[in-house]
Amino acid sequence: MGYVIGVDVGTTYTAAAVDANGRQEIFQLGSHAASIPSVVLLRADGEVLTGEAAERRAQTEPARTAREFKRRLGDPVPLLLGGTPYGAEALYAHLLRSVVDQVVTQRGEPPALVVVTHPASYGPYKLDLLRQAVRQAGIEQAVLLSEPEAAAVHYADQERLESGAVVAVYDFGGGTFDAAVLRKTADGFELLGEAEGLERLGGIDFDQAVLGLVNSATGGALEQLDPADPAARAAANRLREECRQAKEALSSDTEGVIPVLLPSRQTEVRLTREEFEEMVRPRLRETTAALERAIRSAGLKVEEVDRVLLVGGSSRIPLVGALVREATGRPTAIDAHPKHAIALGAAIFGRAHLDKGPAVAGTPAPVSAPAVTEVRPPALPPEPVPAPAPATAMAFTGAASGPVPTSLGDRFGFGAPPRRLLLALGGFAVAVAVVAGLGALLLRGNNGGGREEDRALAAGSSPEATAAATLSPVAAASASPTISPGAATATATLPATAPASTPSPTATQTPAPTNTPPPTATATVQPASAAISGVTTYGDSYQAVFTVSGFSPALAGRHLHFYFNTAPASSGMEYAGASPFTGYKTADRPQGAQQLCVVVVNADHSVLAGSGNCASLPGSGY
Image (cartoon, rainbow, N blue to C red):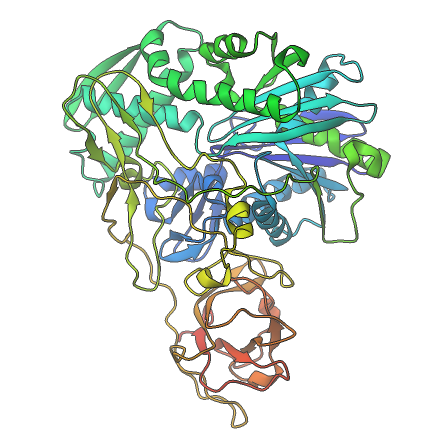
């Protein structure tokens, strides 16, 4: 039987593990470390870089770089990389594909199964987007597994757990927090109740808090830097890395010194563990509250939990264990591989899945390729929720008179590209507010759990209402687009300037065959229309980013035909899925074809005149 790959795509880092014949090992993805940065970069020539290669170029091409995009999964507003819109799941697909390709290259054969992990708080909408990413990555046999379950599986493989033992998993990673309660069964683990999650809380937020402290302590030295200056940008990135290292060092040391080597200021800032803990304590109490909610959701008292398993890199903060024990009164266990426990557990689970099939944790067996199986208990009925309150910015409160707004992450490429509404709707960048001094760290974000988008849809929000203004990510050709209501935006915002980038290919009109209604360069405003904004290559396929307006495509009704400009529209490839369209291989391009076109057709395939456009193919010279 073949080998299994377990993949943990984290907010900040991605790890993989391989199970071959029942033996697991962490796969070395990086040149110096097992994990790689969860970074994707789109070069001007269309090449996509991931991991360390993307990280190396990120300082010189921040506008083409995506970080922390895991937090943006389900956001209907795409990320702009060099002017090209991407959904977070499309970036997921690039990263997943690069990881699997790297393993396959080393082992010389494809895996029998790939297990992809996800936060337990993901609802059906985000899970569907993740499935789309897996399909787009070309993974033929895959299983989705929640991160807490993967962590519990790895722990049970290392420590003896009796059947019936109850484990609460406290998973605190680089960008998200998960809490879940599981019971050991003869065949695996059973998820009890409903998992709790804080999707915008993790180690990167604490990194940013330390960076904000340094900025305040140096009189706003970071804000005074010119992000267009390569030396300033490199210095800012170096300082952020120093802040991260100082934060991690405080897990074993009582104080640390952060060197500040900026073009305009050279000094150092001292930070003690006590000061750091006072900054992060309020947010850590939110994690223990979420853990307690997960235990109550399982119908248990804390005394009925045998132990609390701490996983994730951020769980190594000493205060974490202390607060968890204070809140629950239960013994804690720290995984021997807190950063890689999820990937290892996923690989172990995948092996059991292959060996035992559907008996494992109630998992249905994989179906014919491409197959993506979800490992998840039935979701609880959605609860009506009020409209989300506006998120507030991260801030320190202390002796200073008021907040000093900055946009350090946006200016220097520290985080994910800012959300920008397309089609001349304007843009914005989430700002970070920092105030000098130490005190409570306020990081109120969209932390209402991973099912907010599902509850909103259940409450009657129409996905079609937002489809026209949304460029969704890569999806399987058969998938219908489902658009989530937009996430709450930060209240502290600054106008966003357009990043320096290569413009998307311009749609150009080409004479069509006589039996085809000529497409317009820009889709005519009418009840139903579609427009391609650009065409790139992805592997051996064309990738056409497009929008639709005035209708929701369905193969049984009005849908789309994609065709090359040398062919009639009526003979084009039928499509009713999400953007981008990836149905044509580069080898499918007819001789003389210079453009890819789209048009709206009725159920009988009759063409709506003037309802589409054409865009230049890469290398066409148009």
